[in-house]
Every structure is written in C-alpha cells, then in structure tokens.
Image (cartoon, rainbow, N blue to C red; front, side, top):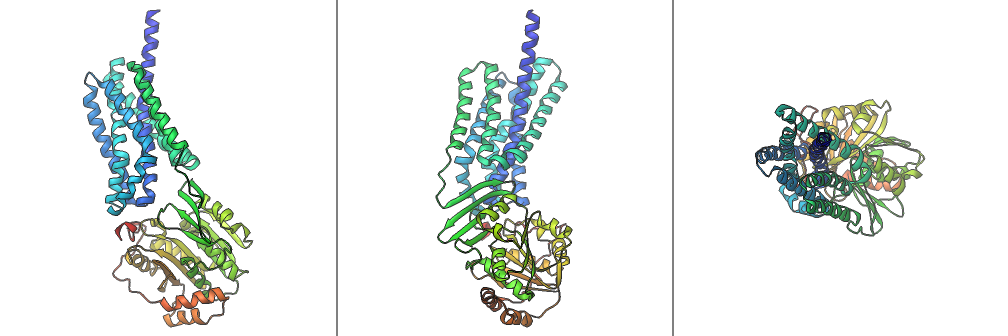
Length: 501
C-alpha cells in the first residue's frame, strides 16, 4: 500500500512539474502576442515593431534558460522557480493598466528604438522569468525519473505545447472576443495557477495566498477599468486593432489602432455633408471621371464618410466599399449610417486580394490605406498598383489619401511606385491637415487638362466646390529620388511615421 501511494504521489508530482512547464510556455507566447498588440498604437505594426518584440523575447528567453539552468543545479531551485512565476504573474497583471502609460514617454524614440524600448519594458522581465521554468522543471523531472534526456525532452516538449496553446488562445480567442485587458488577466491566471502548484509542492502556503492575490489584483484592475469619457460612444477590440468612436461637437470620429489620428470624421447631423477634413477632397475623383452615375470602389472604408458624400452628390452611383476589419464595417453601418445607403455594397476583405480577384471594373477607385508608420506594406507596392489599374475603366481615376507625418518620405515612394502602373500620377494637398492626395489616371493626361476638368466639369455644388479647391494645388511632382516599393522589397511601413517627425 505504501508503495502504491508513493507511486501515485510521484505521478502527481510529475504532473505538477509538467504543468508548470506548460504554463510557462503558454505564458511566454501569450504575453508576446499581447505585447505586440499592446504596442501597435504607439509604434505601428511594421516589421520593425515585430522584429523588436521577437528579438527582446528571444534575448530574455536565452538569459532565462541560462539562469534557470544555473539555479536548477542548486539547492533552492524550487524556491527560485516559484519566485520567477510570481514575478511573471505580477508583471502580466500590471501591464495593461500600469505599464501601458509609460509607453507614451517612449514614442519620441521612433518606431525602431521606441519599439525596442517598449518591448523591453513590457516583455523582458516576464519572458526571462518564465524561461527559467524549463531547465528547472527538467531537473525536477530528472530527480523523479533518473533519466536526463527523457527529463529534458518532457520538460521542453510540454513547454512547447504550452507555447502553441498560448499563441492560439491569444490570437483566436481572447483578443478578438474579450480584448487586451481580459487577455492579460487570462495569462495572469495560467501563470498564477502554476505558481500555486509550485507553492503547494514546496508547502509554502503563504505564497499560495500570494499567487491568489496577484490574480485577484488582475481581476480588480480589469473589472474596474478607467472610466470612459461620455464622448466615447464605442470602444472595442477587433481581430485587427482597437476601434473607438468619439463624438466631439457636431462631428463623430473613428479611431482605428492609432491613438493620435482619426481615420474618419463625419457630421453627426448630416453624414453626407462636407466635414472640412481630408475626406472632402475625395469628392474631386468622381468629378475627374466625369460620369453621371460613376461606379466607385473604396479600399479602406473606415467610417465611410467619403462614400456617404459621394452618394449624397451622385445618388445613382454604384458604390462598393472594402475593409478587412469586420468590427469597422459594423461600426460604419450602425454608427456612421452606411446601412441607409441602398446603392452600397460592403465587403469584408483585404484590399489587395479584392483588386486581384474581383472581376468588376470601376470609374473611380478611392484608396484610404496610407498612414505613416501604420501602412500595410502589401497595399503600397508596384504589384498592388498594377492590380488596381486592371480594375479601372477607360477614362477612370484613382485617388489615394496619404497621411505622411514626415512628408515626403511616404508620399514620394508611393508616387514613384504608382508611376509603374499609371502613365500620369499627380499630387494635391488636402483641404486641411497633413494629408496629400495621390491622383492617378489610366490614360496619359496633361496637368492643364486635369485642372480644366476640376474647374469646368458640371458637378453638384459640394463636389464642384471641392474640385475647384483641389485644382489650386494639384501638380506634377518629381519622385525620381524615391524608391519603387515592391513585394520583394519595401520599407513603406517605416516611412512617414509620426515618431520621426
């Protein structure tokens, strides 16, 4: 009987050790995925930001493995592992509420140095602590089994299984369904459970209470978040970022993963009216096309103000709006009034895939995808513009909004790249702000002819007024000193970032 109890006890101890290894791997990858998402509004979604995130985590893992290996051969390995788990759990609990504000101070460092510093702040400590678990757990399994290779294989295998689980849960379950704050609480819970099991194994019941207290703190911080101002009418997470709608005066604004710059502004009393924001300038595109019922494609719908303005000026227009984010499309329908447009079709799709696979032809194609430091690189390459050109009817026009904080870093590259697909590419200033309009034509057209169309083509009053203002700034622009971006090589994500302004 005593032997059976000892065997059961050994199996329980082995199971607890392997769960700790699993939880450590789960926590590392979940925190890495959440950390990258957390830093996106501050440093963008570029390859630089993810390179910094992954590099910091791998460095922390290397240090953690080394230090865990040293401690694993010492007499206090179990206590060291427990301490590391508690520190990692506490760091995860505090990150979304108390560490995030510190990221504001790192933004002036730029998208590379800032992202590197932010990753160190958010991820280095918990990743290093959790990495210590694998070698220490391997030593514990060796003590139970007496087989070194088997022990190492089991510990690292369960850690890797945990990493797979943490990646999947963060990416496919917690972030899209519950948001960042609750995702961090879930990560904290898994690490705290591992700490609890380790404390029970060491009979440190005081630290069982400590692990429970850390989880309770995380729940408290998440359940009682900062008060949302009354002006915020919608705030949620989507698979692609944070979507926030704010009312300010007579305007409604949509913010999409950019804490400083709105994606859409709309008049609350009349969604089709002019806003005196960059959206208005896109009304010049149908004027240039000169069609009484233009076929219009918009890539990057956002709140859809431009679509509502076109519908108000050209009631017979056939409108198609494409956006990759289902939450943004839902907000556009419900809070920005796109559900009232009977001549509009909305599609949830990546813009690049749409223009490559869609068979329809359009008179006007509007592109609102270009923000410095936030641009998805694959919609700013020569291959993308060539696909757009194939969707354009004879006499058609493309107008793209570019928010270039470090003009002309991003704008110059986009103009140079667009010229690989269009014989005429011009540049115009937005009516307000830093935005620029890239204007491209399927056929060659002179600058004088473009100005004539903008000034003399019959159009509804709002559109005619906007077109006349665009005519004053539209111009040829020398882009020969800028690179052509391609699918093979592009640094478009880094160009025009607010952080380098």
